[in-house]
Length: 424
Image (cartoon, rainbow, N blue to C red; front, side, top):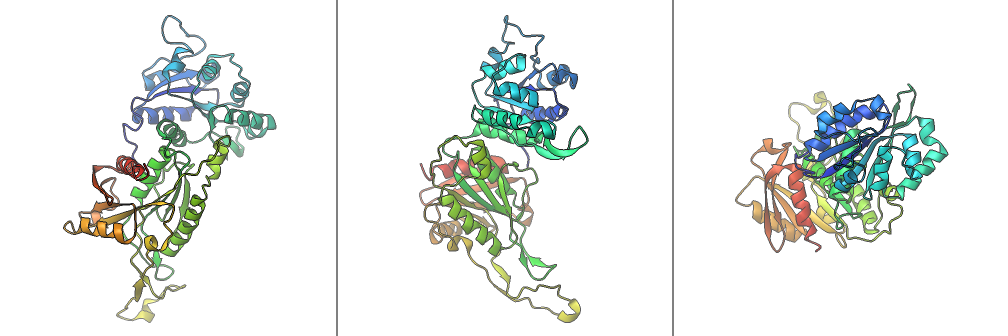
């Protein structure tokens, strides 16, 4: 998914770097922040400078690095002014030593002084040997930080610098990027609200090697789920196809046919109505009081209208089928008409190629399926599927809103803003 160049335009990020081999990944994180429009300043520990010279970060950010050797009170290059400047602080990588000091409010270097002085949300991406990370004291320190305005990112299990396979590798730069953007862009309306998004074209089996499907790529659903995630929603994406670079903390369910999609959707709606949050959200925000918010469903999946009447469990042989083969189809279930929509705001998606009747058909869908809104997408031809851009008419019983052609993440943010008005 292409990240818009203005996603976090003019946001100010203070990036803290400690002494871990994972610091080389932080260079990619800086690039992602800057490409998305943010301004970045870096504070480094003396140990971090053993791995990468400050000049490297200064070249990427166009800002002087703050460290133990160059703090100045004659200008704003000090641990008080730089933390007043920042909208958010990201510590990546964070060593076990730094984590221990942060948990005990020790401020014996410039980086720790910045962390202690910054009162806003801090994102922490640990990096440590498995035994050091899983040491009970380290785990206790992380729990302490988790209730002290820190968002702790999960480490990865992979080959570490010590040549062993284990838990302790820093989260991927893109995952740190998404979590940072989420903290910067979240809205109270969407935060902790359960939202379900369906996407992709369903795959209806004919036999073990053949199926009926359509050209839907699932990109719109992936972009919409990402926009909702960045706004703070607790997202469950149920789809047949996904973008490969979705936020790692987003809950995703991979399905194939329409029956499987319906089963997972019904179960997800049931859970959403109970106001449950995902395990990741509960771990990250275990100190909050859960408030029931009316959930949303964005039905962006392209569900097959017809399915094979007699699907086979083995491969059909052309020798047995003969010169002609008539495939018997039956009308498929209508998922939007089947599900219980009481207590949930439902937005349907409709793709049309007939410009003359597109709006009429969308409004008919809105009324007959008792939806709160319909996102109408008028396609030029089959080549329109799988593109990185879209144009939408957001249709409700009261009004139509035109969302101009743009990349799918920008369009998704517009859809999310219009969807928000349905409950305001």
